[in-house]
Image (cartoon, rainbow, N blue to C red; front, side, top):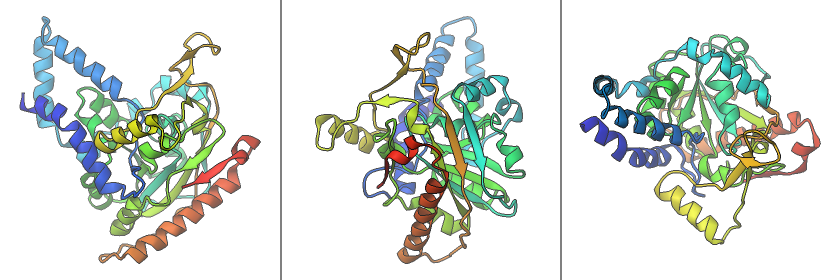
Length: 343
């Protein structure tokens, strides 16, 4: 029972602590990854609670007993399963859009990395497909590199959902986990952080490339603390798969979104995709639009025991310059040339 109480009472507090520790964003954004899987976690929790009222109640008791002993496993990178990452259904998911991963430079297995993933989009589908599955053959393109997609802490307090997330190589986006992976898990680790987070998702719309980055410096500080190289990553088409109602600054809708973002850790979006059986109707199925994720050239970052704001600002500026260069070199059609906004 103590585990259950911790699971549900600690979700929001854990997510807010993660934002505070990692984002350092003056505009209220977050350095967190969020793909909107909370509803699946809630569904799994409801099913498990219902199981207590059936003849299979013993299975639920055994699972929650296991959960109590296994509570801290996500903080150490979880349990990666190549079998899960290679599920055949994930290839159908990849081909639906389609999604592809483009490699521009080799990554040394003797180094650790922090990938900055841009833009967030509504659900970060490109980040999920490319780095928490083998559908786009990330392990073959970057041999010896273990990708860890960073996700909100609260998801790992959801029964059953946490098991799938860990098996896909997804980890909590908090300081303890990232410190462990970059300092106690050997080399060849690559942590993927969706830098813009909730603030960036509010600007997601087809035809627009808006990145919230100028005041997001927490990931640069982490890189300097551990000597992890920074890798700019841009996902063309991430903003094309859903349409969103954009509230103007100062409107009541944007005020509500910012309050949710500040106190709960995510910003509710009003969005839609296509219907399940017809592209002419509205629904939650994403539109079939190509997503191309380009992994840029790593920026070598030293390990500094004593950090100054000048050091952080310098490497942050280098990262921004590298990201702009990556975008300009790989914008391959008029849709991506049309509008670009760095904030």
